[in-house]
Image (cartoon, rainbow, N blue to C red):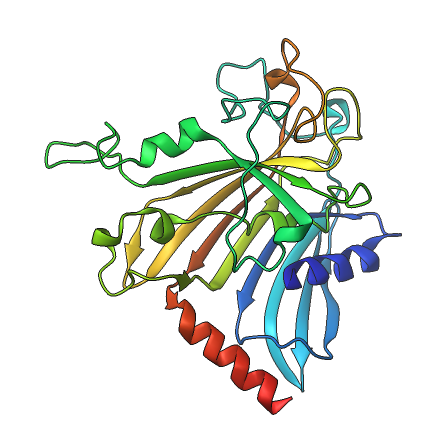
Length: 293
């Protein structure tokens, strides 16, 4: 949510400039932020022919808590206006949407109790993706494996309120909604962290791949597909790789039509470095901050 505020600040700054669209964001989370007064400072570093580089910082009580470098340009779906190469369907080399089921019939599940925003969103995880994480699945590695390993997770996500739409500002929030590698592996694989844990992000790299298409019979306005992969945990640090895809309809609405997959696009990707903290430690810190305020 805080990164969304930083992207929004730069978007407002660039709204009447030649480079109005966020293209790439690198965020370093330097210190825990509080639910209190804050300030965002935006500074332009360079404006070139195709892109503008900015720095945006979130400050609280005179301290920088999040520092970002952002690149703005023109994010257009019109290939004829682009000077570069775009790889998309029907090319056999293009990435296709990784979800098996259609959101019109996907079973909705309750969110975990500690997800504070659960009353605002509905999730429908893809069971065929989750099957790949089973201990007896062929994707588990052995001494003779070549490559492989890691975890996958994917879900359709819908904003419940009809006025909450998928926007450029909501993308930084959406890329951070997933069940990650430390959460999905069996307790036997995470000694010392058998209970619930918190996974704060240290660094996030976010790229806006394509513009958010307008609402139509082929693309939803409140729903996206969130696809995640994770491969490594080292001393609690772990990687998070996320793709955000458009959806053909909102959860529980519409119907599955032929060719719906070819009409979907990946609008953003993100890579994060996060680490593991027992959930009770996070709750203790939150209580300490409340008592000081």
